[in-house]
Length: 589
Image (cartoon, rainbow, N blue to C red; front, top):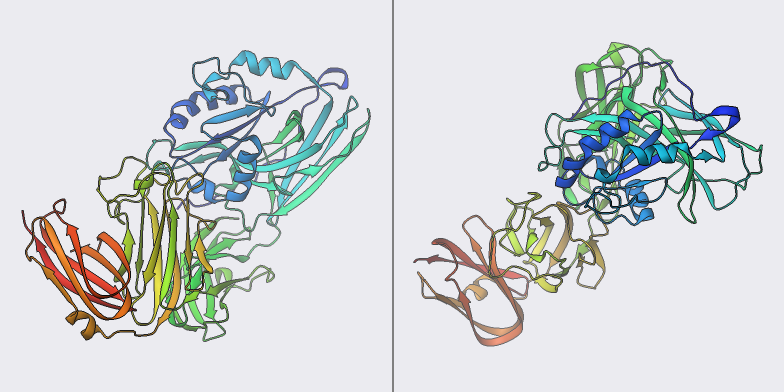
């Protein structure tokens, strides 16, 4: 992970004032781009060079999107990114807009393609006299961004006017391509957060001579800043009716002010599941330690507990400059989790550099982890695939790591977010734009289960695709409304009653021939009516075939075609009434 750095800079007031009180229009450029996007890596370097050469004429704001693959910068603020991408209806990257509209496709690409922007277009936009003059300045005071300035109407202006203010990092550098596929390592003017939200601040109609005073602030405690000396504030006035941007401004030299010498501050708590099963649990949290003082932070005590239990202390040592931070993986903590109430982790940081902390109001962080949703003897999984149905894989594992169920075996857990396609072929792969409903019986007893869904390419189930995992009463436990791009891991608990004993089930099953090279016959003779599911796992525990027989009693014969299976050892797992029985067989060629 990149360390976050600090440099004290002199504040500069950047304006857009022209001759005789009139102002040229700063060209407001907003781009949707992505760290796993090949065309982005192909077009952005020349695009960025053109924008940098016109730094006195342009204001730039970039949104790292959630497709086509993985992008850690999108995860820094997914809500604000999505709001602006959806505002413009951008559905492919890289795509940019200038002053609220895509420029023409005059380079054989597509409207808004970065490669199509020319110097002449920048000059023409800048030469337009704006109805507004903007002055903008920003400073960071003890972790709070303060933005001031003014907007003067040189001409009357009316409409559905919004002032939008955003914090960016002018340049983010990676040693390796963070998307893992396109080789891009330099990212410019990356949006970190909108002050007041992406919806903007409403402005009244302005008569000539009216002045609007800018005075906004936002705490950066939850904003993932990589390099503080790269911070930049941009602002622009936009009419939401037609999306036209009338004026923009920026401050690229933000003064950073810190009052305390020794101040260790508590940041986020991460590295924990979104929900947690009841009973004895052990977690290894990650605590973000922040240096809020002017002195280099070289040591601090991190004190933490769970559910009011015994405190543990982690003695941290290192080197953090002012406003620098580090994600600290503390020692594991064991506690009892409730089935009905949230488990609470409490963290406190003390003794920065071995002295008393000068600011105690930022020393603590708390994280609540809700109980895992619960079901009884079954769950229902509905998956609607996107146009790349063979890319999705899922499985359900017990607390001991045994695969209880799974689907789309061609992908597996070894092929997650590869940034490539297609995945390995399998005759049982899911189809495109299809809906699959799986009624999944769970083994008898009480256990904590993990539902794990992955995507081979790394863009999740796009468009109308999605998944829903429901309990035995039809209540949604998990769905793709929650974050899912490359993979999602969700826990739930279950308590299943025993309808048939393991010995009874084992005696009701026979398979043959064994070894087999073409068709494996699975014979089941049930004395009682039970919901039956058959799954085949390879020696790695991956499910390579599964099918539900429905609720049956008496004799049944199921034929499984194994001609496409590799040679080796396999297991037939039959699940019935909350009980399972496993039989080994061998495939030969």
